[in-house]
Image: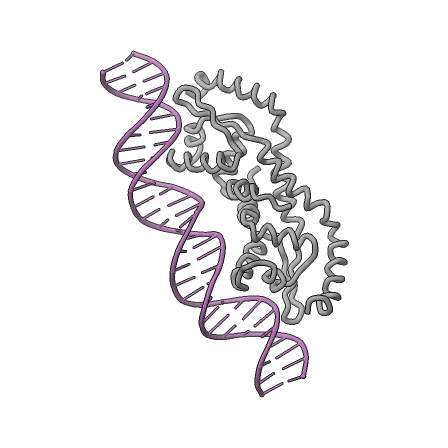
Length: 113
Length: 113
DNA sequence: CCAATAGTTAACTTCTGAGTTAACTGTAGG
DNA sequence: CCTACAGTTAACTCAGAAGTTAACTATTGG
């Protein structure tokens, strides 16, 4: 119903730098230092962002020599998409929702007090 | 490409309490104090969470007497859904992505170095 | 082996998020 | 009008996120 894992995924994505990383890693895998070159951040800062993405399961590392390449994990995104899609099922149209809202207001005094 | 507004929406959703609020408000509009009754939080704490949701455009208030009812704004969610859907378009299957990854590794030394 | 490259770890600062209690504003209703 | 209710605002604490610099590890290549 309300998955715990989403906490990590959403927290990871709730940052512009990390969202950009996810974006470019969606286009193609990339080394950590390449990500660092693109933005005005120190390498340790990039490193931390990558760690957050990795902990959220959004990214995986692969070492090749001294270079660490990152790949985007699409599955982790799907969890979020599913959660959002789930809302669609019980979110009616705006009109239906407003009708529901009015019914709720009508009952509000009686039901709960 | 990478909407700014998503920062607020994602930050708002990156919290279990607020995600639960969004969930129940999706089921039906509700007063602030009702939300407070459901969880072990002080009213001011709830108030802040609601403010975050409102600033993100996920929720709207309507005063009725001394009671403030909250409604979920589905449109704000759509922005996030669109952003995620956009990833689907250029994310291939896992196999395709791995092939792309290998090609990238092959080029990595030559292209950017 | 040595220097440069790629990444990691440590230690620290700074800012923000999340919560608290206490005090205040506005609306109902006897 | 006075009390209780619904919500807001203020002032504060505490923890964690995000960044820094400096120092360390590991790999490549002359």
